[in-house]
Image (cartoon, rainbow, N blue to C red):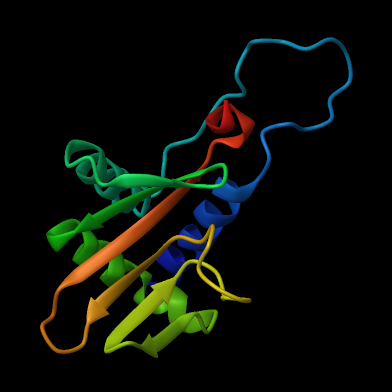
Length: 137
């Protein structure tokens, strides 16, 4: 379980990292080799796929927010359990339990997270993709 928590942390940090890194020499269009995605990457992919299929996404600033529900959201919510507890990013509000991939400073803008309705057991998640200035065009 600790390995999964560490992988979730690494994936979350990688997703937030900038693609523009200082390099010597002229630019190249050759991508840096990747490594196999950890299991929790499937949680992101499944949520985004469901949101895209259901046209359940919107825009906030330069972010696209994908929203999923049901089994995909429950799997993501459950997957965040240990990690969210370890970084103290689980919160209770509005008759819901929220789990985020980062600790909230002010509000959930720009942060991936899921919730469970404490009364009915329904689930939902928001996955945020920072696409930059292209979205503003």
